[in-house]
Length: 224
Image (cartoon, rainbow, N blue to C red; front, side, top):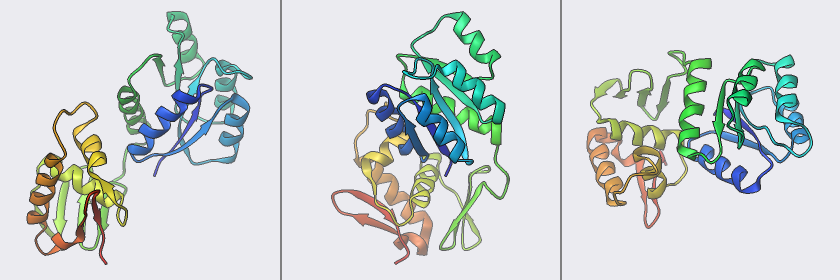
């Protein structure tokens, strides 16, 4: 799980970013000012990306970015209400990887985060593979095998299976399935999830029983 550090002084904005990032599978650290953000940065060497507000109450985002760049090449996305071209150019000159202006769509931020992480770290063949109880998925090729035999899944079935495997042993609500696989702007209903789960179970054959229904909530992948 990749770790994201959010340094933002507005509580509402912190909460929104934290929720969206966690719903997309990231571990999230949040800091309400530059001092705390710097402490988190210094004490967590596995941070994958930093979302940094410029207008912080104690340390300016520019100064914090310069300090971070003296120690690390970790990707930094600047998030601010200041959208002037000069500010954007300064951010890039200081080493920012991207720049998002408030107000913004959280979905856009997630897309930008994924793009930056993909460009920066990529994915090795080994990292792109996940296996659980004989079900193996290859994220890069989007191939699935069950006990070594390849099965054909639609894109949505693949994404649902990956979501369940990423959260194996945990209950995944229908709402989360709908949001993560179809997107927050999807206008369908929860029966869409049930239909695709039914189809996925059929294709998994003898492994279908691994997908447990948690009545009234959603589903979980569990070998017990």
